[in-house]
Every structure is written in structure tokens, then in C-alpha cells.
Length: 344
View 1: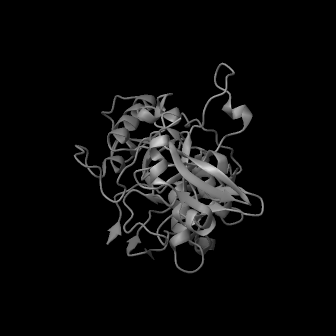
View 2: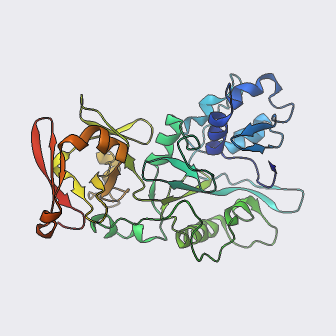
């Protein structure tokens, strides 16, 4: 089966193709054929992907993801010297069907309870099919913030102790939208000649459509709108270093471990830690006041982290739940009380 309906892949997808291609990287395999011939057809897991001819110019226009390091994967001499801002370019071109080639493009992603990131229609979703490039993961997760059309954008959400969870293994239930709605005009990079909405209006509408399917977070990438649906929290801590007491999230990003601030969800035993905090400069609101984490107040500790680093000293006490306590944990010779999710 060949996937020929979609337009050019995004920089994010290019990284995924590079990772999944058996043997040397996809980009390195192009080499001297760059700009002259079609991309080679190759197996990607259980599917084969047929990509259209790409030139330096068309690939350069695809790499609109601002400071994404995906461009670093290009062969020497192919990388463009052009700097890209977070604003979409103003120019448009007319395609063969009379529609407009627009830089605006919507992609849908999901993140599971292990912090693994997938395109929404990836099957199966497991360790072998998730994104693994650390630079890409850092780029994607650092830019996550609430979908402006979602409850997560409400200022009270971050302090409510609420975790909005979704089933990421199946399409959103009772959704009136076609399963491929983000892969067709006007959200696939092509705007028909009859489309009257501006880019800002399309962006706003895409956020609303995404929210209706549980995509309550977004990770903007220049002209691309990346919608994210999370199985639990959008950020999941995946590793904990005993040497420096740092939690790892995304690809290589870290956050100081604060055992005194851990809380437990009494319904499932999940353990949560305060979400990563941006720099003080970025925490400043429009009026110079401190704002909460854009990821919500709490982020999940992955099960592998808990089992490998904390399980020996972790005591979850159901009898203490009525008192607003979750139990206790021992870390580096000290024991700390655990809070209870939703209790202050």
C-alpha cells in the first residue's frame, strides 16, 4: 500500500521517517540524488511511503519549524541559510487544481502514560513506533501549551488538581468529524479557491475541532499547528538521576526533583510531580506578574521511573486518603509525606 494522498511531510515527520528507515538514515540515503530524482520508495514499519519529488526550495519551504534542529540532519550543502521566524510567510502560490498552497498545516499527535509521542494514526503505538530523536522531542515538548479552545487554557485549570485523560488508542468517540479531517483541505496545506477564511480563522477553527476530539494541548511550529491529545498529562517524567537529583523529560530536558511536593491519585495510584517551569523571563505574564506552568500544575512520573527509582521507598497508604495524605516516600535517606491529588 502506498500513501500518496498527503502533501509533503512536515519537518517533524521527516525526522520520524529518518528514524524508522532501516539501515542508514533516510536523508543520508538521498545524497547526490537530492533535487534531481524522486525520493526512494522504502518500507516504513509495515507500510511503504511514496513521497513526491523534492527540490532544495520545496524542502526549504517545508522546514518552517523555526529553530527545529531537524534541519541539522540534512546533507552538507543542502541546508538553507535562511532563518525562519514563528510567523507564517505571507506569500502563497496557486496549485494545478486552482487552490492555494498555504504554509498552514495541521498535524495530530498523541502522548501516552510513558511519555512516548506518536502521530495520531500510528498503529501499533509502542516503543518501536514512537518518536525517538531527542532534539525533535525537546523542540516539540518545550513548545506545548494549552489549546486556546480547551478547558486547559482556563487559568483555574492549572491549579485545580484536575487531570484530563483521553483514550489515545482509538479515535475520539462520537466525533462527527471525518477521521482524516486534518489531512484534507483547508488543513493539509492547500486552501481551495472558494475558501474565504483567513489563516487566523482557520487556526482558530482547527483548535476548536481538535478540542472536540480531546486535543487539549498544542505545540506550535511556525506555520504548522500541532494538536496533542494526552493519555494523562502532556509532560511525563521518564528518568530520575540519583547523582544530581534531576528528572528527565522530553528528550534531554531536566527539572529538579522535589520529593516533598509529590502527590498521589487515589483512584489509580499514579504519582505526580510539579510540572517543569520555564525560565523566570518566560514565566512573566503580559503585565509582569508570575504565571503558572503552561503544562498544568502537575506532570506524571512514568511507571518505569517509579518502579526503578522510587518503589523501594514508596508507601502509598489508602487509610490516609481521608486525611488528605497519600502516604510517604524515602529519598536519599529522608522520608517525605505524599500529598493527595485534588487536595490542597
